[in-house]
Image (cartoon, rainbow, N blue to C red; front, side, top):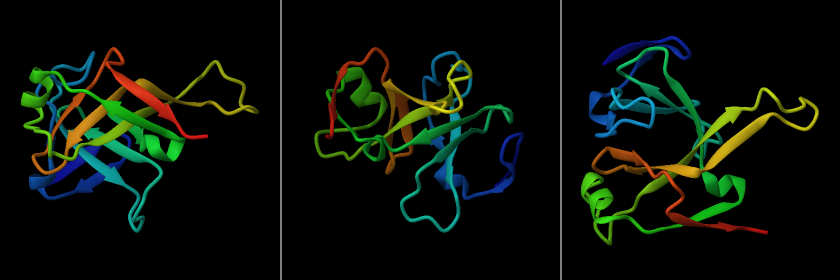
Length: 142
């Protein structure tokens, strides 16, 4: 499959790897089809890009929270588990959105991560959701 992203340019990928967010993402509920990319040649990337396949201009920067020293202890609601086609044995990937804080001083760093609402993805079933409202525990590594 081919796609033209406004941020990432020309993309080619296997349509079997499309991730569906049945409810979309908050403020982008109409966008349900996404593809997760990372820089070629990286086995353990630092940054991922989640490209909407419904809107070419919509790309999110994501990071593995473990690389930021954060681990989640999640409890899915019955509806969330059903949406993700997840049971107790399902392994879910957790990623956090990374954004540029325009108000921050460039000297102290201007990237922030939204730890309050991680994205959860069932990589086997290619289903995802954003867990909003911090219905999970954050554990910080020291």
